Figure 1 (cartoon, helix red, strand yellow):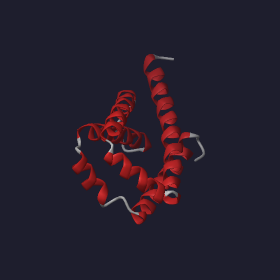
Figure 2 (tube, rainbow, N blue to C red; figure 1 turned 90 degrees about the horizontal axis):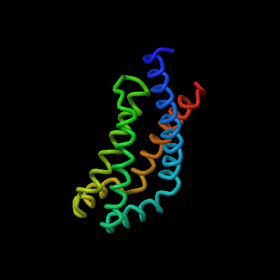
Figure 3 (cartoon, rainbow, N blue to C red; figure 1 turned 45 degrees about the horizontal axis):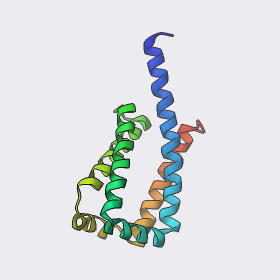
Figure 4 (tube, rainbow, N blue to C red; figure 1 turned 180 degrees about the vertical axis):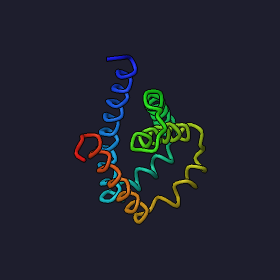
Length: 140
């Protein structure tokens, strides 16, 4: 194989792996949002009140986001572009954890941290996760 073909194959393998990873995670997170909303409400409330936890989580999420963006920064109008978009969202989320103060975080989660928002978001996240699992594992 030529270098270009090998590079294309590596990109596709990485994309499929991340499709599997994000898909499984989103299915689990979607189910959590729908069925464990009360628990997640408490978790978010505790997270907002704990600067040390936000800082530690921010560092881990930034590192994870950077790893994802640096290994998969392919902008195209397909599921592969969606993987890149999710990777950038993860990086931005980590940066926000590091730079937002407690009051800003409270404002940001106040409108979202309720059962109906969790249910709606959970269903959307679950469907997206199932779609990515199907693509990632070749079940389409």
